[in-house]
Length: 341
Image (cartoon, one colour):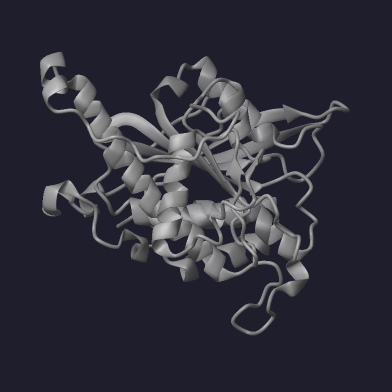
């Protein structure tokens, strides 16, 4: 299929675009009860995500943007670039360039998936650190491919964020701050049913943090799925709750409640302990880690979508019908002070 690709320069307007060829998606109606396949995690390829990660880590910011754009275009997506000016502390001005696509679903309400492909301070980092910084973008490329082949209950807005790499701009993540403010100004946050940020997800000793700002029920879906799939060590409950520095904070600070951060807060602590054989060429980062987070995230997103559909159907029923046929209770989650409810 020939990719339709458009380049737009927008400041600061954000545009949503569509995924080409929706007919190729798996028809959920063909599954019993509309359920997802038995093992959807198998659709996620850690090897493909790792190949993308190596390419992104070897690129400068502009080259990384081109790689993401071209990779999505080859998959048949329509991609939009939009540019937002950013003024630094000393008055210098540069442009932030985000990449955006939309996977259409049955509902115009949206899941928003974000990952940075640039992060301030990492543009001249050693290879292992730069791989950590762009690992969320590599994972999101593979998730976009897999999710585009499925029947989706909600549209999925995918954003590859320019967080301001290439120079100091006075704050750690200006790209997500400007993006969140623009979406709030256009009253787009009301249609967001779930927002997930992927950041630093390839560590050799992966420890995804249970973030305090993340919405409790949605966050615990990821931890429950991780236990079921055998990745409990990477999604450990032993570290307790943490406050993670990731792009979701800009949205949480504006009052968006259904946010989740999937990020390793301890990355880099044990980089020297990573194997360096031909199958594990990068100290501090492993393809197995990308595969673990990708498999857990894919299943979690599908299950959260199913749960929200059930809730939507229940709330749309007349009161008498609700009383006679109550919905199943959401999965129990460990209580944590400060988490969004």
